[in-house]
Length: 387
Ligand SMILES: *Cc1c(COP(=O)(O)O)cnc(C)c1O
Image 1: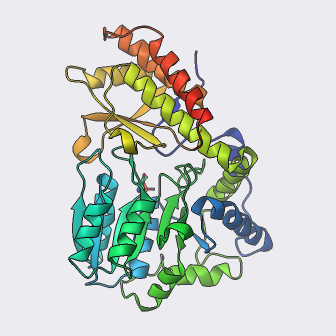
Image 2 (image 1 turned 60 degrees about the horizontal axis):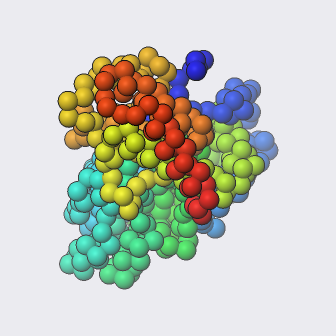
Image 3 (image 1 turned 30 degrees about the vertical axis):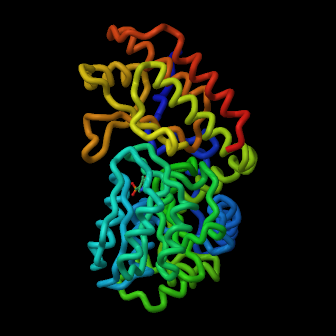
């Protein structure tokens, strides 16, 4: 099959549906007028069920990292003790942000490829007076999804007053999340991951406890001051000029997600993850993540010994399939397939077919057609399972 454009299978930015592209090309509006106010209200209403919160969702014009920075600087003070639970590159980044603003950061790190262990977190918390715990929901660098309900319960048990700040950049909108029910205090996500839009917006929600913490938190903040954003939101505005074109796109992305229904969106992500993982395994690739906590939005696989990845991936790119490489210490060791946002099982099967064709061409010993069949079976099976 010839494509007019690449099958962009990286974990963000994700490819845009046609109507989302059109939304981004619309004429500008006054961001201090009724149209923008209505847009903000629709975004709020559309996102809350995916955040699992009744709290306000603040829309910042920045990358996802800006959302993480907002979580830190709005709730903490220099010198606060923070436990950073890291299972990969993004967990490390969250810890560095807190350090950059003067928090005293202790780390508990899982071996890359593994989820965080609630017992270990509980134990570490018992040993210190922590103001906050940093967690990653979906670790995009390793393809591992942390069990946030269990981790949050462990934190609540050991340190009832600690704030729980969660990086949900590559998970919200794709998989179930219950911020209020799980007792999470701040979450941050970004437009270019599961929300089917271009990069440019970070969306942040805070619990009542977190809003209260903002009154006394002393880390410096101005652009990302969530209190300023909340004040402006009361009149349907943002304090600074927002990325309006991206807001149009997220609005359209949410409209598409609503049309599909939340259960449908989640089931599609489960099916695409199952297809990716079964397909890659059938192609002889060893998956990087432990089976119990494999991500529903991104899959990492080892580059086999003896495979010249540069040549192999060059051939994949020539066939219009774009995969992601490894990050940090996994550079050159793994490759990653993104399956979030506007993704279909068909696009995953196509990707597996391409990797299979290049594998056969490069003399890897696999059975022609077996991987696509395995992926298709896995997707069908997954579609019958609840998300
Ligand atoms: C993509 C991502 C980020 C960073 O988002 P940017 O928009 O690149 O700043 C942070 N955390 C996770 C888990 C991500 O997947």
